[in-house]
Image 1 (tube, rainbow, N blue to C red):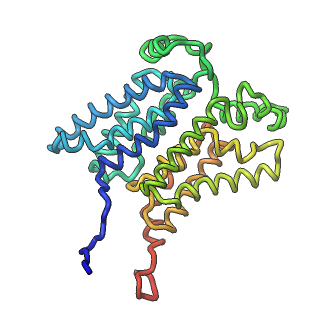
Image 2 (cartoon, rainbow, N blue to C red; image 1 turned 60 degrees about the vertical axis):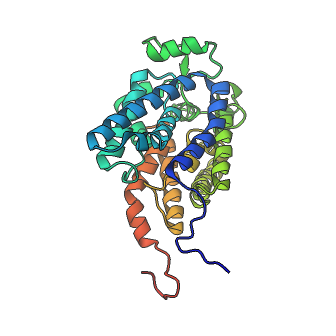
Image 3 (cartoon, rainbow, N blue to C red; image 1 turned 45 degrees about the horizontal axis):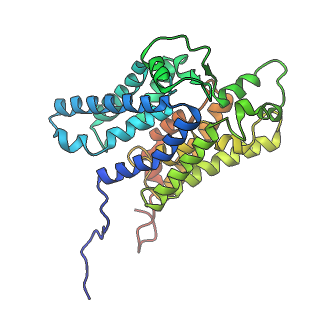
Length: 337
């Protein structure tokens, strides 16, 4: 009989391998996004990736860190892809670059680099840009836009008038419709298939399903645990279901909230960040459940169309305390350490 010395880690779990698998998990959503919503997302991914690598290289050089080691670990690319997927795909190139700057330079390197950031860098980028440039962050493309990839790339790199080719997100459209003096019933609004598709926004529900597929891949590869996705989606289902049952004419059904906005992206790819989130099993449940609750409150009652970014950032502030108070009991001891 042979024994292995601790820490008994048998799999190769390098940062590069983990980040590569996260990118792989995002590919189905990117493909569906490009096919059903707009191929301009491919342009934004390229812009964000190049900007992230440039800013990463500059900060590594200034900090005296080895360029090759950190530029190839994939962390900057994952952040860039999440930013591109969270931002409007027809937003001007400089807006994406601005978001990447705040994510890589401010939220990551000014706090010490990889593994030291207290806030999710991609969500910092989103929050800064939606507060600073709310009009640009609200210009989402009309699904089925009849323009080629080249024409859409020209929109990203030019300064055209976007009123004719952009529209509100399903969340924003629903919120605006319900704020009129005599709002119609939510069920009648959601029946508009041109805006809300089958159940959560024309085209966007399939993107959300692709995020769900990618999240299942991460779970199968054991890169994330079930705690955060289940708690996040469960809390969103619980609060949206309760209010829908209470007033179905004023609140959308749970299916709408699960498959619209950034719910699936947040549940599987953002809230699961091991650096800025919680690490204990109970802490993950508390962290994700509260983040989903805040996201729902902001998207339904707040001034922004979606609250996923703000919910996660607010819970990033609480993560150290939650971890401290949710430490599991040490084996063989009656009380927690």
